[in-house]
Structure formats: structure tokens, C-alpha cells
Amino acid sequence: AARGRTLVVNIGCIGCHATNGDRGPDYSKYFAGGGVRIESHVGRFVSRNLTPDPDTGLARRTDDEVKRVLRSGVFPDGHLVPYTSMPWGSFSHLSEDDRHAIVVYLRNIPAVKHRIPDPVLEPAPLPSGAVEGVFGLKDYGIN
Image (cartoon, rainbow, N blue to C red; front, side, top):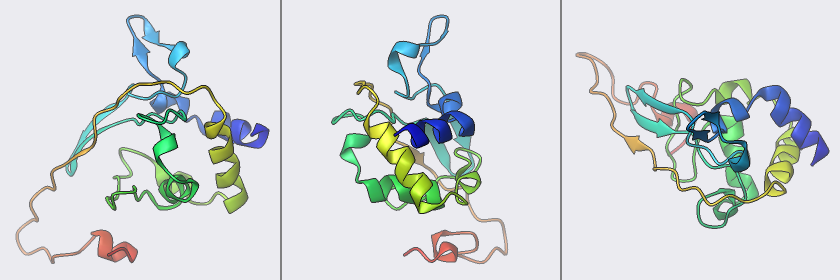
């Protein structure tokens, strides 16, 4: 967990996974998410609750599901979060031991019940003449 904390702090995860209050970040809701909302060409995304809350946080996810997001940006429902919404490519170089340390740390912080809206996936129409599947999930070997 100590190694995971070091990684999480140095990577800067709290920058997006904070919860905002009336006067800025609400540190009583450490890693409960919601502080960043992004509209992109593929949908709307809100930073997730990374606390181990069983209803609204990571307790609903397996260790492998969390590591998969860090490794490849693919969420449990199979959608690929755009790099502009979560810079997962910056974390893809982490070792499996590093990813495991991050998961252990996140599983051991206080749980905070804080529901985050699910992503709304609205793919942009393909430009005229574009080939179906280009830059899609199949390009990443995901079916």
C-alpha cells in the first residue's frame, strides 16, 4: 500500500479524482471523484470514485478490472475511455507490480459513498470516406 500511495501521489491521480466542494476540493471525500467532467467527441465522462465503497466505488470492480483500465483504458463494460478523458497511456508503462500496489492502496483508503454519473457514450459520426473500425476497439485487439 505504501508503494501504491507513492505512485498515486507522484502520478497526480487526485488532480482528477477529487470531489469539489463550495470552496474547491473537498478532502473529506478523498478520491471520491466527480471533480472533472469532460465532453469529448465520443461522449461525456466524469472522474470516477476510486474509494473502496461497495455501492459507488472500486469495491464493485475486481483487481484485474482496475488494472486493465490502468494498462489499456478499457473499462469493465468494454468501452475505451479516450486519452483526453483519462491519460491511461501515461500509466501503460507501469509494471504489473506497480499496478498491483496502486490497487492495494486504493482498496485501503477510507470508503466514500459518492455516486458518479456513468459515462454517456455518443460516438461522433465517421467522416465521409472513413473506414469503419479505424481507431476503434478492434484496433486494440478488443472484441
